[in-house]
Amino acid sequence: MAQKAAEKAPAFFGQQEYAKGLDGVIACETHINYIDGAAGKMIYRGYDVEEIGEQTNYEETAYLLIYGKLPTQSELDDFTAKLISYRSVPPEVIQVLKIIPTAKTHPMSALRTGVSALGTFNPDAEEQSVENYEDIGLQLIAKLATIAGAVQRIRAGKEPVEPDPSLDHSANFCYMMTGEKPSEVFEKMMGLSLVLHADHGVNASTFSSMVVISSLTDMYSAIAAGIGSLKGPLHGGANEQVLYMLNEIGSADKADEYMDNAIKNKVKIMGFGHRVYKAYDPRARIFALHSKELCEAAGKPELYEIAKRVEEKVIDAYGAKGIFPNVDFYSGTIYHCLGIETAMFTPLFAVSRVAGWVARILEYLPQNRIFRPRAVYLGEKDLQYVPIDQR
Ligand code: MLT
Image 1: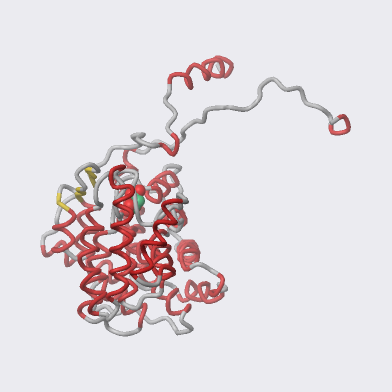
Image 2: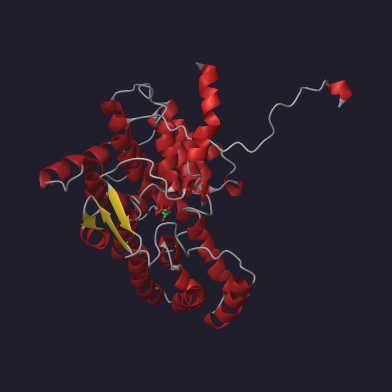
């Protein structure tokens, strides 16, 4: 049998189209999210994200993504109460975060470590029922904000604060980072950002968490994998790289020269282009509007002007190829104006995206098949082993 399968292998590969980076490969079925890349549109469970972004809070969005419908008021109240009851993390997890060498560790690595540590304190972590995966998923949605808040406080040399049950998810997250109840603007922007980042097709971090769960391992491992993937500069980590670039440019009048050089030398410009969108990312459109307002209100209008000039130059050079700002381009300018440390931008993304990871995992598990692609073998064959003293 094994011999027959091996003989078949070359023919099998010959018939398959090899798609580098799984470009365009359909990996699963979903009802959660659809992106029309040509039109620059994105929907959560049928609802346009631009409308959802303006109308809902994070809890309502998470409910929609996970359960497939907008909740009634009592369903939302129960869901919100459950998330509030799940916010605390064991003090030992905070201890683990405190012994991480903060100055040298990216906060995404601390977040990933926090999730791994959290799993070791749950005696039910390995139980494989759908109910258990769902329950731990909801716990992780609630607790990731607590861990990220603690990571920020420890980085700032401050003591982490306990969650405040009187605040909704986004306001409480702001509170746990700063130790103060957020202003109306801070709360509104954080809410919008958490809603807009909550899910986005089979992106790398979502796929990573699905691949990991497909072996029927525990939920903590899958979410830790999602965080590890999101951290990279080609994924969620791009938002902080954008701000470093805008700071490096320094002023709007230097943007042209900087960009001309970058374009001439084919330097990768973070925050632009997307595997799926060949038009403006709808999330970037929303963030661009708020970025202008916020930069002006924060007395940093130049930051928006630099960003706008960079956008114009990139669209001028690459717009015809379908390269436009993506979600990461303007989000950082908003976080910066809210006073958030640049290294914390990607953890903010994770605190939101965990709802998408959980929704996708719960959707995939009932139809689970372990992910197991194959590779085109380009190496040698039929070599004879040479003993080490004869090489
Ligand atoms: C995301 O939201 O995950 C990013 O836009 C990346 C992607 O969708 O591939």
